[in-house]
Image 1 (tube, rainbow, N blue to C red):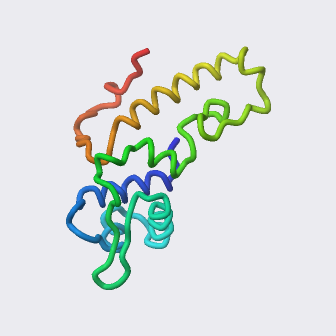
Image 2: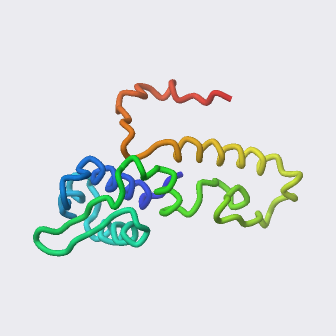
Length: 150
């Protein structure tokens, strides 16, 4: 499950993507439009600046903007920066791998193998989508269309 921090970060970055090339965007505009607490948004945007996703300028004419074009920022990158991993289990993470302490050995664990497949498919999808990709709200008109195809 995505944390609230990750969801807020994605929404804020999408807001900046919609205004890419139009100059700095004020924090209050992002906070109000995306319904994100301003204090929380300040912390998130500061982290995204340190991670190289956004630039900022102080002052009355200042604000925030994407450091790279929206098509160069993937959802996978954002999730990894805010969550640390795409893996649902520590043993299925590429970047934050840890063996599970209460499990059978990985070579005998069928859940481990399933979670590796889930991680790889999740990475394929999220790394293939950027902030520039149009995702229509009516693309998924019902949850029935989201049934897994295994």
